[in-house]
Image 1 (cartoon, helix red, strand yellow):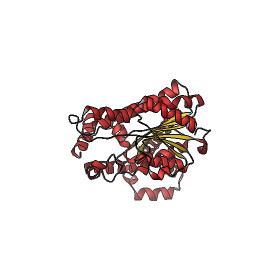
Image 2: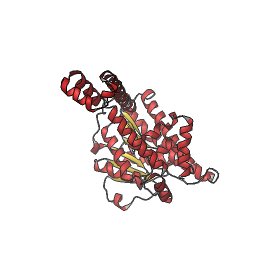
Image 3: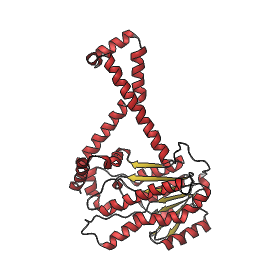
Image 4: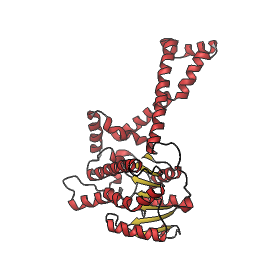
Length: 350
């Protein structure tokens, strides 16, 4: 409940901040005070706060808000540029009916919803999963399945060769497969820990090594890393999951930097996605506890729609789903006492 109240307060604060820091509103108010009808300005001032603070102070406050609003807008533009190899432009050369995507863990949950979204765009999709392809995906002629343990470099290499032989060179890679446990640090068996890190983080090395070289040669591609809001804040009794998702985020950041500075391939885009709790088989064992603490969970399609939309934009990005959870990305910049307060709130709901 405390987490719900915090999220609600943060959402309300963001709405008010967006209102007060909207450059157009501040600029319009300033123009009205400077050039509006003196009679109308006088009447408005008599009705509002300005009659207590004075017209001069009101103008100063509006100039400050305008400056802050312009700075906020510029910051957003810079964030968009930074996530897109310092460009605001969409990359050309994408023809969805000719594109091939690889989706790990595409048989269920977010992965399956993403496969369906890509198919609707006309993209052919190769699913890498240890599970069997569900019947509704089997019926789709543009979905192909390779039973593959993505924690094995050899298995990924073999599947990649078969995909290239049968379909061609993939231009989209979505590292979606994931595991979660609900054990404390002391109760988690080492074998489960090793397997989770292998799926949630180390597998990204294997798939990227298999598919990135051709993307670099063609200077065209899009690699999507599905991380989590747990990348920003460790969850009690899921420390292994949180740590693996933090590793996935670090992998994304390093990959983007290498593509830009080492391989010099700005046409190869990278996106990292941070969903909040999603209603999947992975969260099913803790569904009641999660929803009692944080409210209704997202559905897989909520995350998949954001992924497919970002791919369709032909730009890289950092996505936080839902956007109201974006404040968690700044947690590391909070004072220590506030960071620990947020973690304790999560622990009390665990």
